[in-house]
Image (cartoon, rainbow, N blue to C red; front, side, top):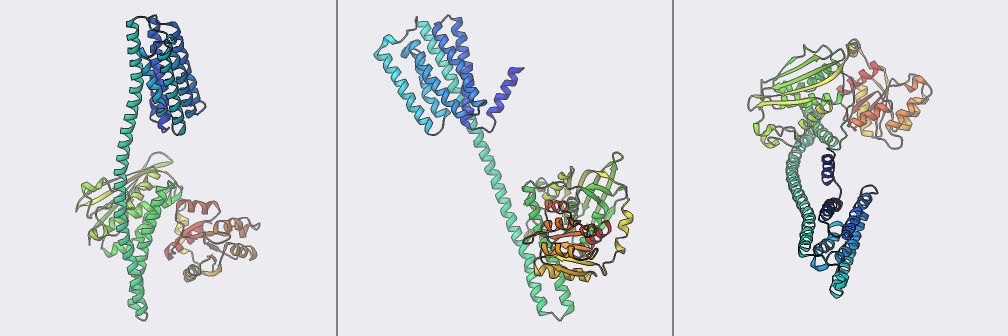
Length: 581
């Protein structure tokens, strides 16, 4: 059992990531130990020269020394040099004691000549190779010039046996080394070919992705620039102006979704996708998504058929951002790929209680759209893949939405499956487990619509003049009295120096020169006056990654809104922060 275990460990070592020279050294030492041990046993039973057996035994015990240097002292190059020097010492002694040039020792000398090239790199291999030629050349010359120095082998059969034994041992060692190098080369060659094929596929996919993105970005940009020009010309035509502004807004929202997809994919590739748990209402998230997509749904005359009757506990512990991305990507895809007019989308959310604290949730989203071909369905979750590009399908997108969706589902510990038939429709099924809560917050949430912003004072902290003008106008239109600060230091001083309760809310930009939004919030939370220190702070930033949300929570912020600012998002987040803080 131990031998088998030792063989497995040795095999794992040969398959590990250490250098080829280290592996060949280990292979040489192990094979030398095995064959030397066999030689000693054979020599003992055949009653061969005892002195020669003792020399072979001494050489055999040098092998553990080299193994110790390589493995325990972690100096494989030193071990290789020591092993070669041992060869240069013992082989000449064995040469003179076992028949000289008429024995099997010339084969051993050839092995000694090859070792520096096999086991050592760089200048050391050249020095050792020259040293080996000098030593072995001198040994052969001395044996010819002074034959009395050579201890002859008694009997032709013993001489034949010595040659056969040397051929067997040296040939076996060289064969092992050659075979391993050949297998290693073929394996590396196969891996290189596989990597090149993968790189070619990725390169092709990225090329197609860039082509699609170029088209997809230019399309809304062209609409934004074009309709902005028309708006300036028709500035007095209210009807046309409203139409142009509506189209500019729609194009801008689409452009933002493309950018978000690329940023999400970048985060996934860098391994930064982490689970950020909080208390969320899964039905509320779904309703919000449908509200956001209301214009597209109505424009295509789509019926949304919903069944959430089996959800007893809408409040769960989960990741708000990831659930939102999952539902947004899948529902928006169902809308995009549905029939041109009059299609239906079936959305089912089911809860299956496992115990008093947890439930399994199943979300199904089914459309009556174009469907996915059998050839493409296996690639549907791969990044940059699209069955048809934008110009062919006339449906814009980055080709990253489903990749991001799958990663988000997996981050929740769930699974996602897809069934589809061309020209019939597609069904996505998501399953995940979550901790459940009672609906104690329903009453508080029901009061959201009753909250008024009239007369409430907000401090907007923003270093960009254009951004602060936009934020101030949006908040003023909602009824806030707006004051401004252009950096974190000024924001801290305004909160500190004004009376208790002067500000009802602070909208804080993150990236600012000097003191950034995180540090400004920490300083506000450190104010000695409890009422001033507890003023609600909402992050107002272009940073959209999960770790940015985590940082905002850690520094004491109460909410998070991403730029560009959208009135609906401001209203929802502000009401949530005011009611729960």
